[in-house]
Length: 144
Image (cartoon, rainbow, N blue to C red):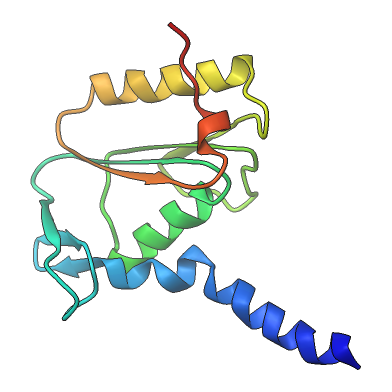
């Protein structure tokens, strides 16, 4: 009996944690800008000019979902994108490369993922939306 009562609540709770559900109010199209910040009435967002190139980067377990949610929430136009995540879903986002990264223990691939992000950012002139989720610290590492 208890299982039947807890299961529906658990499914609802988990779906509410999905980036596709909670992220859209924080990223909105406003004319020729993308406004990033608290939902309307909760504070001031920061407008990001779309005249500059916009890069999307995500690291961690939820990074693929977060990047997809940002793109669908505001139709985020971007010039480059990179995700470092333990799972690269079959559903790909055009223009965004997904690098399979280790988790929970960092490894050689973590350093490679970090270097790819550094390379992308060093060549990028413009704004960056950078999404960090759990597992990001193992997915991307740089040693001295």
